[in-house]
Length: 97
Length: 318
Image (cartoon, rainbow over all chains, first blue to last red; front, side, top):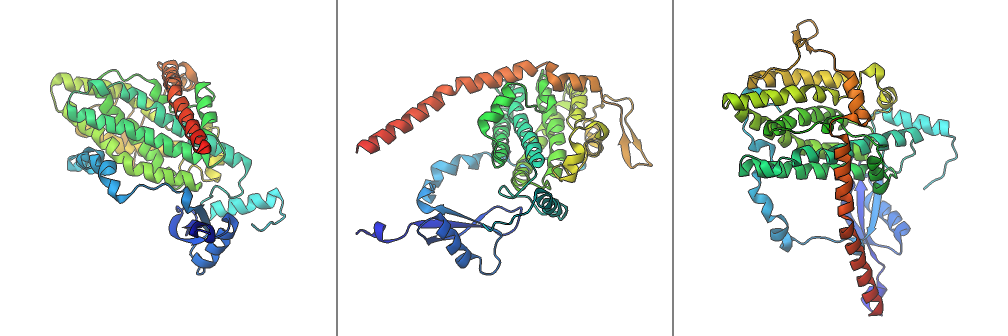
């Protein structure tokens, strides 16, 4: 048996701390299936009323960019200051927009 | 996960209690069918407005007077596409599919902000759209940050953060024109003359005539009435026009000391009705352009699907 088969699949856990807020990543855990992951997440990550809703997502279903890719991903943003509101200098009387 | 057997009336009461208590409604909560329908209608119209709004501005990208203005305009139009995406996604959490929403737009069943059915004739229109149209949108969207539906509220917060650049760049470019040559100033005044009234129409009919307003306020989908938002917009915009030295084309516009607000003239509601029901200057053109862009992109979607299928076949074979 290789390691992959021995371990239960890994799930990432996201918790919504309060209605109206986004779910936020809090950690991960191993579980047999999503339902079990949800219960484990409840036991593990919300023991002190940390949340009102939990999402679990199989870690293998997440595609992530890497920090090493940052240059090709984000570099072009640095020379676009005009995307920011404060790039536009407006005279004091009308500066409240 | 626990199943309670309660009737709809009880569910509806709990829902309304939650709304009254200023708690957000989240996608998997029970909600009245009307609430869901009303939200899908409003959010998808809002999304369509963002996307259709790319057309009048896109019209000037290739003719922007300087490279700086061109980069700014490109960035702004790109933002609008992004805002459309945030909003379509919020509507999709309610069970509406993107295909259905786009189809409703193409078939004229879904509306979008009537202002985008006016043509952008001169460069001054671009500054004016940023100043007035985005300004009006911000007034509306700031109040919608407090809407009762969580995903819509979060989309609004994200959009408002980005929107301030839109209005400021527009106003900045109008300062250049209004404080420029006599000809440039006249061009800015002409743009204001054409865009002022359609901007006021963006807030919709008077409260008394507004079909969905009452229920939307009770459900806190809308937080401020059409007329209140319109007044907010007029009050904040008049001093900005004064600063530019431009004249708002409304002889009835004057400060009302007693009310602490500006009084202003009546909107041409016949024009509003005509444009919103499909008979404005650019309605057909806007929808046809959107449809063509969608159809012209079909080969890209086909190619992506074919590539995915090919990859799947390969990994099956291997």
